[in-house]
Length: 307
Image (cartoon, rainbow, N blue to C red; front, side, top):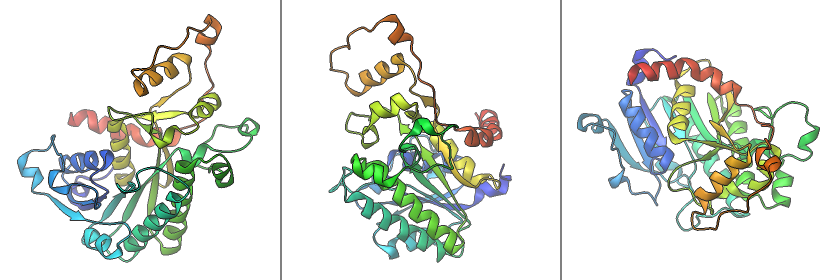
């Protein structure tokens, strides 16, 4: 757990205009940080919503326009910061994941990590990736143990089945890790499940292959508050290292699947009732988040005291 003085540092959040980014800015301000909120060209930094932050706290946030493909704008946003929380957000003119998105996400990751390496004040980087960079493997049933942070998705499998979001997240994270190790950057990654919330829709790229994820016991989701806490926890805890699978719910029952389907397609007709055996069937969860849960114990206790 970080000492109290740690909370008075200056950190950068990029892209701060996304759901995760804006929530991170708000929580970091509440914890006493000064924040450089870097928004991409498609974000509206002037309207950055910080509903949970009092007026005085808002004075500790500075808005930057930072394009992950514009190296100078990244270094400007990082100047004087001790840490970076980075999450890639597709541009408005290219919002969907396709076979070309991997190249863009890799280039963005390379630029950001290289900029961190050239910023003397940066002590730690929290890189937001996805559980889809872990779960897509051939012959999953032949793996005796649960999948965890040691496993990587097979890029050839992703290409074969056009799992473009998984491909992008896998190659971008691998690029970030290779450069971070080469340049001596202290980096940890959060491999998040599908982010839940009111804006979730059937077009979410994470859902490509949802049926297969469900059948294999690797379909996991995460709430925004938990995801934000996980990012701050791995940043502040000096013992954190490597990758962290981050989720607080696994879709492992027929009831779970039906509930999610209704959330995604509320106007669709109700599915045909299944037999008692099918309805009662539980899928064995094959993804482990023990590493993060162990780290979060003290952090969650501190959060309860704050609340």
